[in-house]
Structure formats: structure tokens, C-alpha cells
Image 1 (spheres, rainbow, N blue to C red):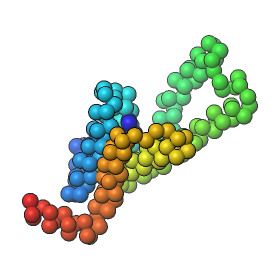
Image 2 (image 1 turned 60 degrees about the vertical axis):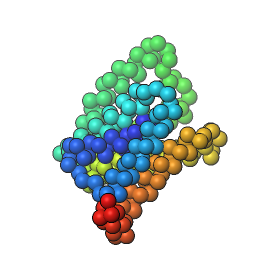
Image 3 (image 1 turned 90 degrees about the vertical axis):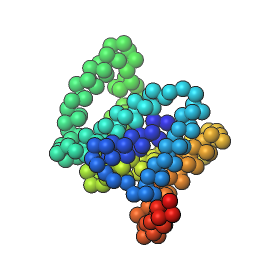
Image 4 (image 1 turned 180 degrees about the vertical axis):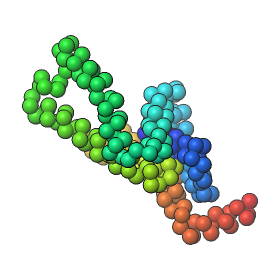
Length: 199
């Protein structure tokens, strides 16, 4: 759920702090996506604090990476330099309590754990590189692709249930994605003008 709230936070931060303007259809698509997320949240039955924390923390990270003067590699180096001592202390504490996995399990698992750092770093570099070149609101909507693909993977590969609630929520979100994607076309701009004149 946090990954579906995050794009809305990005759009909000882009409009509020970066003064990004949304077109008529982009505004409609945001309302549709908000409706989908709200419906999912309502059926969840309580305030999703963890999801909201994830969305606002990663949204703020995206905003900071956009306005920071540092390039993607320099930024990642600075972030890693700050977090590495904390991570090392955490790993040492895990080993002291004999619950650590790195270096204590099989060699293959240790290599996989080390390799996960590279797999994690590359998307962060690409994200930091791209977020400086396109509007934050657009970044937000592109980020709906990852959780949508995860949902597809969970249903098709892992046979997890896809309920009516999911169908309505994701139907609204995917409609919003489609609308946002075609919002810059000449046809949609003409339809928007006609709609505004009618209203």
C-alpha cells in the first residue's frame, strides 16, 4: 500500500514545493488514483501508518534528490558514507547475538547478500539521475509501474488472491496511469479544452 501512496506524495510535493503545474487530465488522473488508494485504505480497516511512513519518507527523499546539487554518484556516496557505520554496528550486534547471516552461513548466501548491495545501488543511482530531469509529479506516476508489476507477479506466479477490492482499487489506479500517460497528446488537450468550455 505504501508503494501506491508514494506516487501521490511525489505529486503533492512537486506541486507544493517545486510549483509544478498539472494539466486538466493529470489532475483527473490524480483524483482517480487517490480514489483507488482511498478505497484500498478504507477496506484495510485502519490507518496504514507503516505505508504512510514509507510513502512520505521516500517521497521526501525524491524531493531532496531533485533539489540537491550533487550528482547521482556523489549523492549515493554521501548517503552510503552516512549509513555504513550504522549498518556495520548493526551487523556486529547481530553476530554478537549469533543471529547474523553474513559470513556465518554458506559462501553462496554470503555472496548473494553482498551482491544485493549492487542490485540495490543501481536503481538508486538511476532514480537520482532521472528525478533531476523530469517533473517530480511525473516521477510519482511512473512509480505506479513497480507495485503494479509486483501485484501481477503475486497473482500470476505466486497465486495470491485478487479480490473485488483489489479489482476496483487497481482498476482506478491503472485508469489513472493510462490517462496520465496520454494526457500530453494533442487529442487529449483538445478534449480538455472542450470539457472546460462546457463546464
